[in-house]
Length: 202
Image 1 (tube, rainbow, N blue to C red):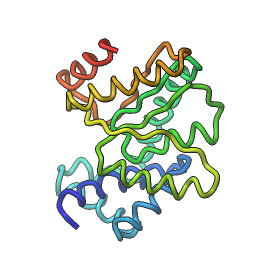
Image 2 (image 1 turned 180 degrees about the horizontal axis):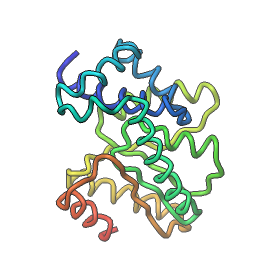
Image 3 (image 1 turned 30 degrees about the vertical axis):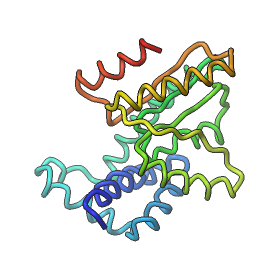
């Protein structure tokens, strides 16, 4: 496995592993897919977590995987509640750097959903994997979201995304607002200001 793929496997698999611990909807399906993809076991994921203190210091040694899963769960509950407030026919929801989040699957298949569009964005290598995962999910009759390439720090990608949003808006005159959703990636003033620039341009 290349170093880049190993980092991707670490990030996506650990997040799915945490969510599975607290039974977040579709987390188990996500984790099973990723474990097959990277040819690793759930025990190896646990072992990687146990060794995180060697990379990030002793602080991590006192937090169990289950405890960190509870932190992840609290964040997901908060984000889900915020998202529910924007669940309206005149709103398009754009999830930035969605990773292997199963939020959309949870909402569209388990809850009342009314928003006009829900678009998940990320880098091409992630979207390729997620399309394969969604294809397996669709076989069981589940609905899936739209996937679009977007590196949040790439101006060209943002320009293309704005063109895509405007195209959708021309076809659906009911869309009046766009809600951008992100957690875990967008941090620091420079990144926030960068995203806001495009938010206000829209």
